[in-house]
Every structure is written in structure tokens, then in C-alpha cells.
Length: 228
Image (cartoon, rainbow, N blue to C red; front, side):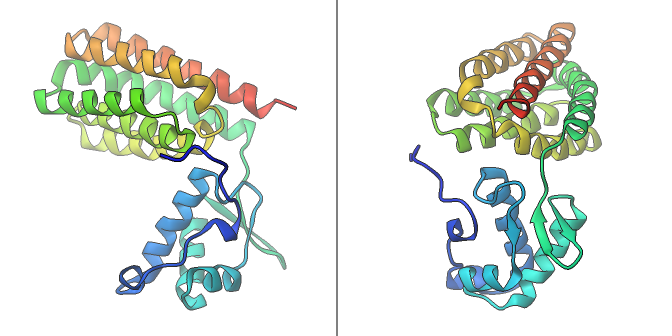
């Protein structure tokens, strides 16, 4: 597993292979660019030139433009008049809105998870924790963190709530990716405590631990946003 420096910008994107170019290319390009944004390959403020992206990916500009429009609708990029598409920046206001929503939703999801989880779902959480313990790669840790929160919400047996948590976890990953090395040990211990409460079906403890965990992440991300 690599922990070296990430090549950023369009040059950090790998050309699509033949299988990836087959079928509906635009959705695949959209997912590829989203992941590149979340991994920090395409940094906030990066200019996403459609022709440059098409050349780098080895495809025509049409699916690239479709992918950029989809990313704009989903809020990952912004279009500036006469300038083009740019990766959106991180903001104090979105951070506040995001973590306020996560605190409410994830605390309730964790409470329900302790009451409703299945043995199979608990095994999934244990597997995610094992991978979190082994990983030292910041990009992978951010991805595992989002996976953990989505899997925890699945234990609530409320598909609508789990969908909201999954969407928020994806957005949180955009912010969390700035702090994983610093939060690695703390985050793992908090996840372990949360899973333990869910395992014991202690709904009150699970809800409180989830609330504290989200608040701790928010403090670290906010500190990173204000770092010189």
C-alpha cells in the first residue's frame, strides 16, 4: 500500500482502459472525477478543463462535459462565467451545516443500530475496524471512515436514514481527508467504542458516543481549515 505523495491535478488521473470506455462512459467519468476530488488528486480550486480531461482520459470531450454537469448538480464543482469548471472549495458554513446534520442523524442512527443490528451487520463493522487498524494510508483511512459510518447507519434498518447518512458521509469525507493522519488513533478508538455499544445493544451509549465522535471530528477539521 502506497503512502507516498499524490500526484495532483489532471495529470494525476489515469487514462481509461478499453473496458472502462465501453458502454455509458459519462457516469463512469463522473464517478472517477468524484473519487479524485475526495482523494485530493483534484484539489479545491482546481480548473477542470473538459478538453484537457478528455485528452488525459483518452476519450472524447462529450462524456466529460456530461460528467462535469452531473458533478455540478451534485455540488462537487462550480461553474464560473467565462472561466469554466472548478473543484468547489471547503467552507466554514458548509462545515457547520454538515456536522450539525451529522450529529443529529448519526446519533439517532447509532441508537437504532444498537437496538436493531443483525449479527451479519456486526461482522461487517468488525471487518471495517480490522481494515482501519491495518491502514496507514490517509486516502484509504478517509474512505474507510466513510464506509464505517454508512455501515453503522445500515444497522438502523431504516433505509431512508441510511441513505441520508451515506450522502453526508461522502460530503464529510471531502473534509475528513484533510485530517486522517492526525485522527487515526483517536478515530479508531471511537469507532471501536461505538461498535462495542452496538454489540452490547446499549442504545443510549451508542447514541452518545456517535454524537461525541462527530463533534471531535468537526473540531479537528475546523482547526485544519483555520491552520496557516
